[in-house]
Image (cartoon, rainbow, N blue to C red; front, side, top):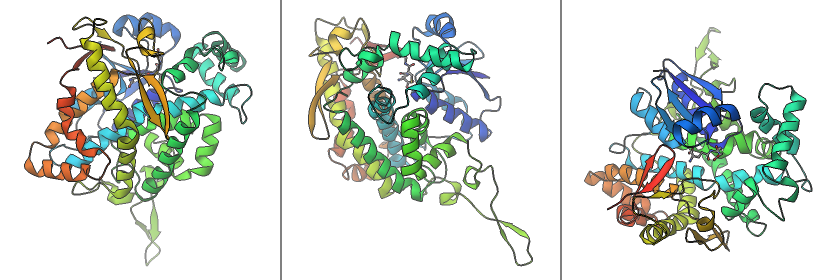
Length: 442
Ligand SMILES: N[C@@H](CCC(=O)N[C@@H](CS)C(=O)NCC(=O)O)C(=O)O
């Protein structure tokens, strides 16, 4: 089986999946490899959208013509077919590490996405210093005018910013990505609180990755690839935050390169590390943390608990409110049982704008850094929670697993509520078909 990944270098979720596929290939678990294809506007309109109903990237196509969309679905699809080097622990054997992996992925995908997107577009505004608008225009132009000379790509990116996103009036009449940020509750009132949340996470990662090469120890796992979403194409590559990341959080910057297999460094397995023996001979020695393995005995170190703590403190209240809001919406006259629901992460598109903006039925109050604000409700979160609920069921099948998970969850504010996930999901089951979401009728 061969694979084609349709992606953009600048894209949050493409960075997650690309790093994952590269790792599987590097470790010999994807023998035929994969072809990374630039999803140009021509391919998006003529190939991706007709096939899946969505132009979002990344999308994966197998050699038999099957399409898989959404980064988590792509990882689950490949994991089910290539299991020599799994990136997700066994929920039965390592229930806490497994849950920690999924929770970090969810935090990275759907919470850090807000400050991740904010930095890109904030430092592109004309009156903001430092400024990376030309860098940003270049990366967008490389999608929109792929193959054209550099100056034309730069101009194409600048034209997209003006024509599609209205960048020159972003503060007074937000459109495109600027409207998306407002839909996610990132406004002039909250943007600094969102960035503080990111800074706090980076400080926690400094501690964790200072001791362990990866989230679960000496090998990457789902949580690492999730974190590559915010941390690769956005915080590492974008010029302004990239400078900040490398100068202020070099440990995290080094981890980004390690996850991508980019750097020539003994810790990436590409370069050998030797000492000199008694007779001057080269004696190999390990260069990786934790013996190059996941931590034994289902250990979740305190430094990883700290990251999971951010999930429960900041994101869990939004997720539980999401479940209530989606249940109420599904039961309301605005929705036909079994009908479609909005499925996007980043902004409220027609025909959902009326429901997902202002005080619409699919909006809710939330808090970030002690500031009360409002944002759109994202039914995709319900799908992510259903996926998590299946893993949770497996993790607590055995009494030993249940006890271990229950004890671990007491470490977090409202952590034990996770055990009620299935009850909370009862009235708002969703079904995902390609990129589309539907409520489950009956
Ligand atoms: N939940 C999806 C999100 C994919 C997504 O939002 N991709 C962005 C780029 S990072 C995109 O293509 N946006 C354009 C669009 O939605 O039309 C995933 O996990 O892959």
